Length: 605
Image 1 (tube, one colour):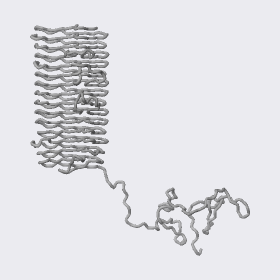
Image 2 (cartoon, rainbow, N blue to C red):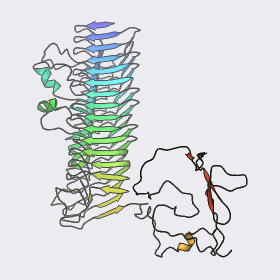
Image 3 (spheres, rainbow, N blue to C red):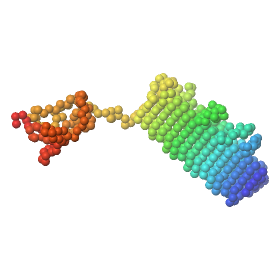
Image 4 (cartoon, rainbow, N blue to C red):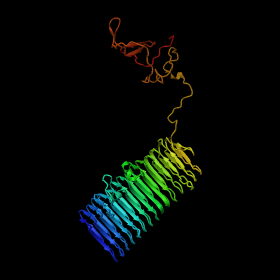
């Protein structure tokens, strides 16, 4: 089935009564192109509900300002739900990049309200890839004139891809709550702000591509954001101004936060995962991340983007408060490693509220290139930081961990920092751990480690921009405490205490020799020549050698005697019981040979 050039399938109400439901169920493909649409509307002045849209197909392609839309355009009633199922892919392309245009209408799957009533829920199930590109959007929102709640968006796909100014969004510009966003994929989730593999087009297209791609739930009116929940069996990648965000912006309401479960998480090139209160009354939501593999957060890794994106080069995971309320907590659990480069993880309070807490667990945690983990605050003070690292915590190139009160006028306290890691290493270059304050009290720093290298506690006033410092001081208030413990570490554990008495030489002589045998002597004169114990066999650990100059003679197997007969070489010796030793070629039966101890008779016997 194909709709082109402004074609449409529509059901609407203009008076009193509901709009009918639109149902399309085909075994082939569905294509919407060049301004075509499938609609269900409640128009202005109408009183009634949209019954929504239901579509089933193999593949669905929506392109060039086309869409599937259920909306209340100013009447009284609910916009209907949109339910889409495909056995294959669903591709949503906003506009044709090869044709420059000033057209602002993008391709969309949308449910919204401009009147009194709820925005419908959008449910998408695909057996293949769900792809949004070139300004495509999936949205469920309330306009500035709307009064109602968004019922949110639910997506279940194999892979999900957003690129080039594309977005999935629930929002409130009027009065009501923005709906939740629930995303599940059996494969990967990829968000790219602009695809650098495709040449930019002059004019409005280039301006659009300087923007971002995102999954977001926002409130700019009176009401809460929805919660964003993402559960992927594969990897999540955010690149080149890609965002997952939940924010209240000059509004009154709370952010419901972000929850992510994935294999590996990668956030690069000015991308972010964030919740925020920006000039609003309400709380910034929590961020919870669980990764079965690694977490990488890196700033401007591609230098070719510098001119496009300016000096802002950080990638972040943050909960930010710049209003009245509290910042959100950040919890990150990784079964692999966490690495930050030109990046930061922060719960920051620049308004009248508490900076929240940060909890991180991983095998290794690497902070590099001016990266930091911080819960700093102005009015109330810093939050708490808890790091549970099973292998190594490494700080390099002006990186830091801090929970500080930043205001010189307010009596905020420094937060508490608790770090557990077998090994903590700070390379030279002003890498600090600090829980400081101005008017209030410094926080408490508790570090449990087998070894700290390159960083140490500095009392108040002794920290320096040229050293790696652990501090918990206050400029005008009470200093905090720093406790560093090394459980199970004993400096003398592998050493042996030497005796403080001399050795009795008589105990070193074999008792096989009688004390009557005065001609037998054994003198311990140092290493070499004898084993430590006379009963032990000789070993290869000998240092004695014959240093006399001797002439080297050819080796022979036997020598002649005085009668000219060949004498076989000796292979052993025998004792005759009177102390006489005879070298022999072979032992006679009954004669003892070898190196066994034999003592001669005493003198006079």
